[in-house]
Length: 173
Length: 173
Image 1 (cartoon, rainbow over the protein chains, first blue to last red):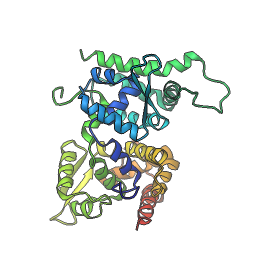
Image 2: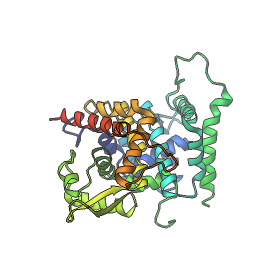
Image 3: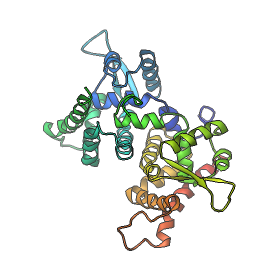
């Protein structure tokens, strides 16, 4: 580990992984838009990611253990990307980035998403992470809890977040 | 604004500014180590930043309104860099990066810093941001408050944080 990294500072290690113009945007699309296939990550990209860059970043994220690539059970020819627990744990970081961008850069268009994230606070974040664990890891995230939240509660976080995101994106057109 | 940015998503806008291998490390050194002069940012850099890259990143951060460059009152020949409010607001983001790195990459050496940041929670973060405002903006951050925290309280956050960081770095040697 020592020789491969510039330093062992945890902030540096994180920058080494995400310090580029695309990785976190790919993660963002997987987390918030549930884009799981190469083609939709490519064609629906708002920022217009190039095919070779997307392929490279996905491979690097797989190598870092942030996503896994597997065969899509519903389309045998297709690969599907899923977040690992490590990838799901990036949600708070993305939320801080959104909060900072919203507060300090005053971007107007995605106000909806940033607002929903901020107003939802730790509770919405926890609910959303729990939903991501079910979707990507295929398991309930809180084995200690005997009672799972009701379906309506579970759907709420992702609906709120994705709804706000899509609404904001729609304004662009 | 529209034409200069790939999209107006607040996460994208933030990635456009900090999506490189060095910007956030420069911010980290200013925030946690109070390095305010070019030379100390250069020579004390744990990651060994190159002089031309440091100069470029400082200039970009100035252009983005994240830091300001001014004449150091105590050394007339020297320039001193100070965080703006926008720069101070990056602390929560850096703390999330540290938390993620600590939790998901299991780096052993800077455990001290990540631990102090995590255990201190929102209170330590607020105290430290308040101190950064005094140091960099030269003003009390809470004009509405009539009572300022006592000096011993104010020193606590920066001492805790910097102490843990230096201790962790010292272990490297």
